[in-house]
Image 1 (cartoon, one colour):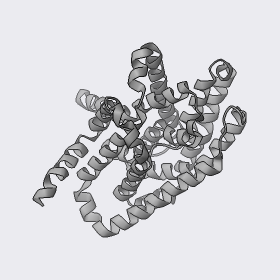
Image 2 (cartoon, rainbow, N blue to C red):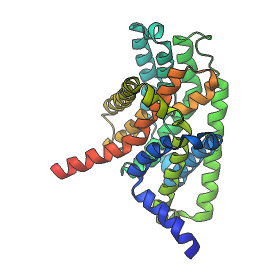
Image 3 (cartoon, rainbow, N blue to C red):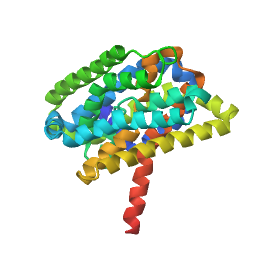
Length: 319
């Protein structure tokens, strides 16, 4: 136990300060670009870890309870996977963004036609929001992604501009979902519910480390881009935060007739999309500007939970 006490204490500390630890991990990852090549092969493992931990932390009974009352989840999925992508891409097409800045137009597709990041149920828990609705929403979005993304790709892009294979991304997503659920079921049976509750902080710390691995891999090249194009990167950063907040606001409005806490949890998930999934599906064919949008687009994912926590604390103090 003495040998394990130090790493467990470190994980517990990271878990107790999860929102700020996740935000800082992105900055540390950006400062360690020399590790990117070594870490990038473990991206799938990091995503699988986050999804497995979400299943372990929330439990299948709670997820099933949300899916047995599917109206809110289905409304949210329609808004997130159909209405928001189609609306934003249509506006981009109407103002000529597809012709004037095709790289950024593809970036919008990458930012919108994907499910939330695997960590959103963890983020919800760190913010004391119900994680089960966020995870149920994530699961249904994952199932819908191959069909919804293929629809948007066909409607708004030519095959030459965006070579998209819905079957490939569907198999990839199915592998993550089945693998994470299977591992979580095994671990929950081995560990037990009581121990999982007692180990909540160390488990959150493991999630922080998984996010750190992801940060090192995706921040490769962002430092030089900031030095060479500071105003352009700042503009992209503002655009990605604006897009995330816009999606959250639209989803919160769409779910205004449902439970407040559950709707807020799903709204948070809606604004934090798994852009890395689409980048991986498209491979190395994406333009440089699109890749930069993807990298800068990680800032809302890593910083939004911390920002929301700060805002909520300030509101609580002022009330």
